[in-house]
Image 1 (cartoon, rainbow, N blue to C red):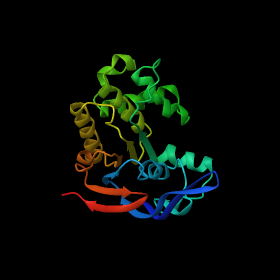
Image 2 (cartoon, rainbow, N blue to C red):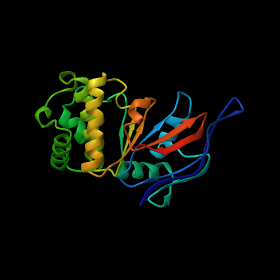
Image 3 (spheres, rainbow, N blue to C red):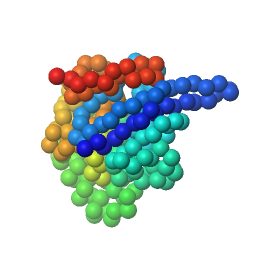
Length: 228
């Protein structure tokens, strides 16, 4: 089943009356349950494409569809609803609130979604169990290693049970051993929990561990290939 589809997506930014074409005529489909990487050098358009995929921005021209619905011209509120319902975000910076425990950090998206405190706590406990942090529920971020903090961030992305996980350089602040552990967490989410995982990375070695690579160069789609 096609879950995401970009049709001739272009994105242009205007500064001082000049046009800067960041994405140029990008087209691809992503099927439900895929684990793929979007890669390319700095300035290739990865972050801009991530923002469109994640409904944080819209294309200047072309169409972007989620489960067959064209969201290219949705209002800000409509895009926010799509994000909250279907997409979990993980970033290079963990963005955990330092004064909240791991449990409370993970519970926040549930509270924003209107769940009760009890419902949010139960969902957060389940989400932290998925990333094997049930023994760290009441630890604060400063009491956790970098890898544990990123796993809390993954649990937070999972707590509303999104179908799509969008991870932007999620191992960029971690040493190679810890980065491997985090990548293994994504593999489990993909295989055991059937999540679609989209990894944004400049790391060719990391991208090579996914099942498919979409490579950008100067705003164009330079490669779309399967990994063996």
